[in-house]
Image (spheres, rainbow, N blue to C red):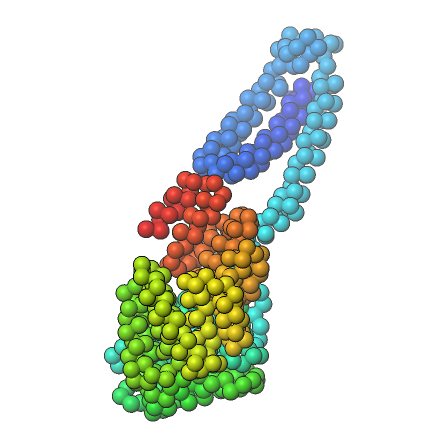
Length: 485
């Protein structure tokens, strides 16, 4: 046995085997990187690995049976032992092995430090940045309709939104945006997971039972870190007291979080008429369904609210935004935006401190008037009245985009996404601004994350198609836009 081993060493079979394994490993690593770049099918790299594996016994056979001499390759049995140069060949093989080892170590270090850094950068571009939840942050999940006929969803959604706005008046609280909170509606997602996704330290959830003129609202505040209840309470009230009970809940939540209200923190119902408020909530539920048919229903309900209470500023603002949304998909722009402008101005006249009125007016100024300065002034005023509102930030970012300053738009949207990370409107604007700024790798990563995480968000594949188009990847752009239909 020792004789065979000595002969293997003399013929450099062992050295050849070591050199072949190292070189094959390097080839496999480089091939994997190259094939990944070309998006080659999985069977290609498998074929390369198989060929490299089959090459080892062939190489060892040639190392045993042949010898490299000054005259060329000869069969080992034909070489005079006294003229053999296997010792010199062995030294050359040793040098080769050392060189290949240095390359292998260099590749491993590059993979560990450089490529890992690229992966980290890519991950941060494709998903919202993870951040430790702040203790003074909260998300209000859609309250559950527990009424006997299950026909009060519009009411529970409206109650949720009003509580969300009331809590947003507490300047010491960071409140997750409506879109992100409502993304979990009807889903049995673990509250701790929701807390991680929305970067909030607590969650307010509850249920509503509405029967005749009575209402029962059950609420609970939960710590997202450990899932424990911080506070819970049941409110049994006459339906006519709905506005005061919403204020009461907001104040109790603030107290549970040991925060004080700055301002009155009251719910902006802008009416004392329950019937008008009810119609407004119906209109709001239709408005958020984003289709022309639903916008028609929203307009009808907002108008019903105004027929009951002509001084309800919120209903005028809702009517304006519904007109603007519907008109954006129709041909009679002058009539539609004219109605939207009239309603927005009426809302501002009735309540100059209502942010919704200025937000509605800005939509007309931007979409129809092309009055960028007017839209800026309206949005700035809305932002003063309701700081951090994602819809307002999205409007300001769009103006920056129009002004040719996509980097400012990107910064604004990134700040808003920290508060409303699943807001599809913000995300689409973010991808558009990244694309316009030439940051197409980041835009593609975020668009792909949206397509995977928020497939039902609306126009996601259209957004992805635009990125591919800007990158010159026409086949992928066509596939993405076809998937949109």
